[in-house]
Length: 277
Image (tube, rainbow, N blue to C red; front, side, top):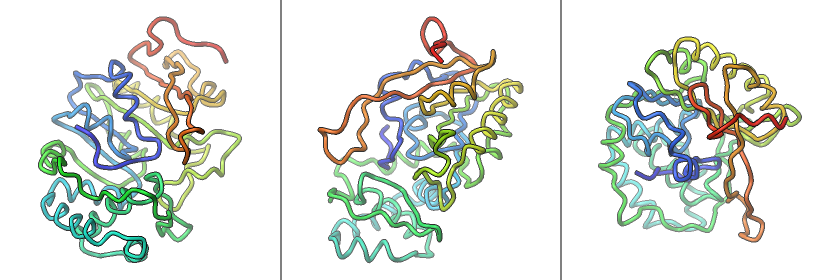
């Protein structure tokens, strides 16, 4: 099924064009950078561990798992009241009730600019209103979200905590923010902290340990020399894949771009591993 969120860096393109890269015989599906969950919803595993450092995001997933009808009702109210003034009013508030928190998060995601999630140094969401006005869709299957999440454990934590449980029989899909070495202070943020180059290096160490424990791993990352160098070992197969960039505000600025896909259990290139760097 489709994700309920629009997410910058989301992987709908990956599951639509490269679904053969995914492991379909794992006992457990694990994702430490959940985001919109495009890979999870496509795979629809019976058992999963899903995490993200973004607490508001995980709250939305938990409430769709437990209280989907209440979230739908709250979103319907947002839908009826949506306007520019209403958007900024909702954006400025931080409800305590978990259902209201989840509905607020989904409402802002669906009506903000390009589905971005960005916060300031105080952790306050500050993305301006976008052009989308649809908050609840007629064919949206909230019961389907609940059923898909039934066998999932959801938690907000650092990626290392989640990767540390992966071992034999697990499929680990990893989609970190695309920080590269020369751009340590880029705009990609999870909560109020930047995902740094040191985090990228820490990540590959965690993944190497998980691979040694027997986990099957698939990683998406930036197509940049520093990433190729970071994963250059006999443990990893790495290749560049093409996708269409959709973040530009105008379609005339959107064009094909590339990312890398990295794996320890299959030759993602389809033949030989790319060694152009």
